[in-house]
Length: 179
Image 1 (cartoon, helix red, strand yellow):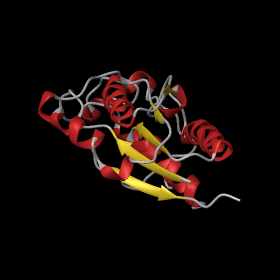
Image 2 (spheres, helix red, strand yellow):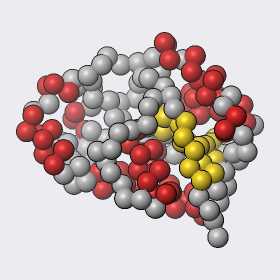
Image 3 (cartoon, rainbow, N blue to C red):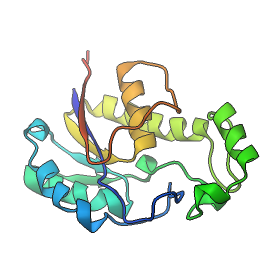
Image 4 (tube, rainbow, N blue to C red):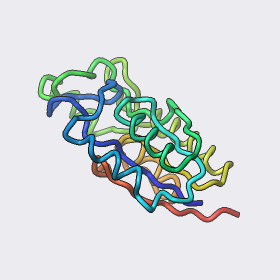
């Protein structure tokens, strides 16, 4: 099973703003990436494209599905971590003590009204289980958090929520043998 993981291009939002679930589009300066990503030869052979419903992912996923002539599945389990009341706020206005608590316990900390790292891992784990049942080559278009989790789960590695996310507009390939 070969899975192409694509992180959305740069979003249309000011630097320094928290935007996990905030539904923002792609920055116009990054829109030209969409055609190049959709035409990436590493995507050939995929039988389905899965995407987060966020605009910054969905437009790219639609272009990839069209280029490959395969079905598109919009799946809310591929959304970014929900930062709750932090969404849309500048990071520098969030209490340092709260950010420190999150860094000290990324699995269990929840911003007010948001979700924990465990919840993110659980919902992305459900996607991974479904992909394993289907056993088909596919493309996943999502966000840094879910892609970092999905890659680790597919490779049988521990999930590190503090590891660097893949670069925006990048493609990485994960190959997993199936019995």
